[in-house]
Image 1: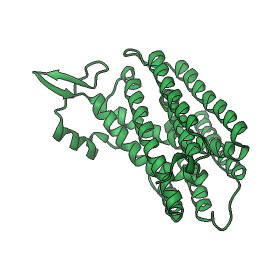
Image 2: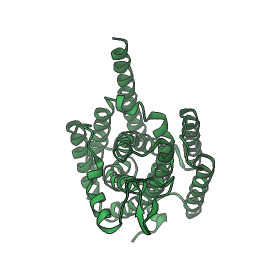
Image 3: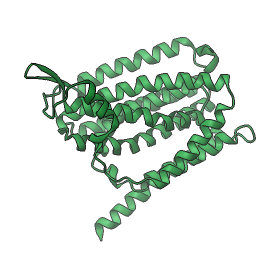
Image 4: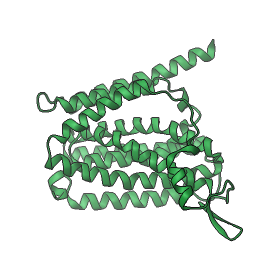
Length: 314
C-alpha cells in the first residue's frame, strides 16, 4: 500500500493540521449554532454558510500559493462539484425530515451528526480511492464509466416524493432496536416503560448516513476525475460538506425550485466522466474544466431562478 506522501503533494504535517482544524471548527460550530433545541433562522444560516465558504476559499488561495495554481484550480473545481452535488442531496434530506416529521428546532442536531458521519465516510473512501488509482491505472476508466452512467441516471430519474420511512435501512434498525414515534427533545433515544427506544431523530440520522454512503458512489469518482491528488480530493470534499448543514437552512424552502439542477449536474458529471475516460488520450487542462463546470452550474441556477420568477409573475 502506498504512503500518503506517494498519493499527494501535501506533507504529513498539512494532513494532521487540516484534520485538527476541521475538528476544531466542528466544535466551534456545535457550540455556537448547535446548542439546545431551536430553529435556525435563515439569517443565521446565511451567515454560517458564508463563513464556511470563506474558510474554503481562503484555504484554497493559500494552497494554490504554496503548491501551485494547477492544484489550486483542481481544488476549486473539486469544491464546486461537491458543493453542487450536495445541493442536490439537500432535496433528499428535506424528504427525510418531512417523512419522519422532524420539527425544525431539532433538525440542526440531526444534520450536525449527519455531516460528521459524512466526513468520516468521505475520508475513508478518498484514501482508499487514491490508493486504488495509484495501484491500478484502469480504475480511472471504471470511475469514468460510473460518472457517465450517473449522468444518464440524473436525466432519467424524477424527484417524486416517497415515504423514506419505508427505507430498507429502517427495516433493519427496527429488527435490532425498539423504536418509538415520540420525540424526547434533541435526544436520539428515550425510555418508555423501562425500554430504551430509538426516536425518529435517530431513524432520520440513519437514513441520512445510508443515503450519503450511496451518494459517495457518485461523489468520489467525480472528485478523482478532477484531481488525482489525495489531499486535494479530501480537503475540497470535506470543506464542501462542512457547510451543508447551514446551506440546508438557507435553501430548504427553495431547493425544490431548482428545476434545472439535475440536468446541470448531469452535464457536469457527463463532462468529467468523459474527461476521465479520455485522460490517456487528451488531458483537458484544469482551468478549462473549472470554466466549463462553473458555466454549467451558473446557467442551471440562473435558468431555474428566471423560470420560477416568470411563473410567479404570470
